Image 1: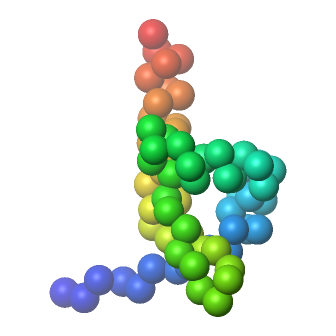
Image 2: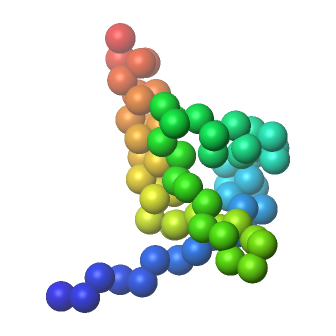
Length: 70
């Protein structure tokens, strides 16, 4: 079975989806404990893997639900 092709999401769209600023995106990118998807550089532009972004969102949601349950 072949693996589906992953979409590359440009950083401006990542910022809109998460509702964050450029500085927050920089901080998330440089915080190893957060495990934010790394940038993929193409001709000077930064992109993120859609699959990794969705996994990151799911992890954030799971962490929030676990904290709320406590």
